[in-house]
Image 1: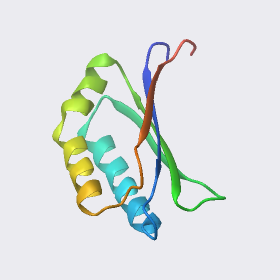
Image 2: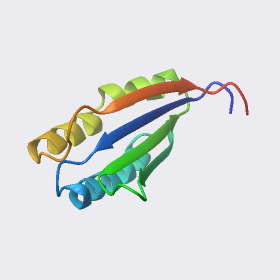
Image 3: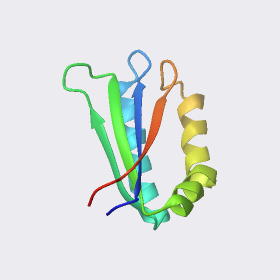
Length: 102
């Protein structure tokens, strides 16, 4: 699938909030896959060495699908809940990549 977009994010849970963040991220992945047809993949990973460290990636069919995600209510609700519950320590690192091979 040449030219799809993948967003990679890395974040650290606040002290003693790893399980709560894991639950929210898993919930978020299910919501996005159901609510956003242009979201092809949404995978969440937890470090095997550091239980407070998470990495996830999302793959979108095209620029329009990614833009819908960025401006949509699901992402806004996730961010608000994450902040309200104090689940993250520090900034979230986000990078977007465009595929160049199948």
